[in-house]
Length: 212
Image (cartoon, rainbow, N blue to C red; front, side, top):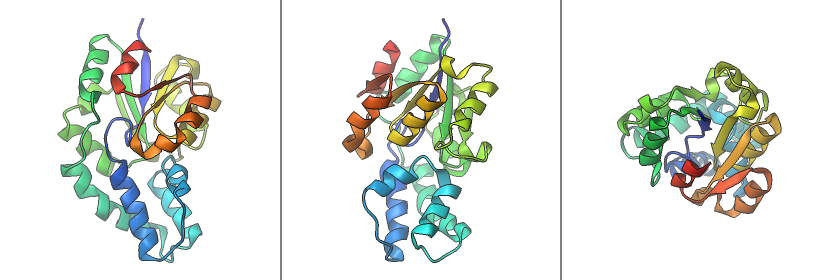
């Protein structure tokens, strides 16, 4: 039986959350805007545009476009040259592909960082679709994005397995009707139990998804 997966990118396929988090903290610190660690949990599923707007509402005194420019300036070089796949990801994806599974990416990251990174890691072509939230003009905090992605895959939402390390994204995908698996990442280790509470399953290692 063919299975259909949609994977998050940051913190799920690649060990990039320190870069993403660093970009956020860099901007908030630059403008002396107070924040708590919860900000990462909030901003991760929003994507660049919505995330930049959120930071402006927090008190960052520049335009949304300028926030995005600062973020991309910080992140692009890291994604193009340094961000690595998480342990077991490449091997597991290849095994899934050999089994005939449909593999897809849906991420808040823009194609500007997403595509070069996947291509450098030589896994871009493994996926049937590589989607950024920008392609849907909404965020992973909106249940509609999961319905739209499922429709493009010619599947019902219930037929799609969604994998993410972020609690909010997992909760929203589950609300939309998808089968949801949480995946461990150091950046979200404080929220493992929360993710388990909304997910159908949880994997500490990417290779465990072969048993889904």
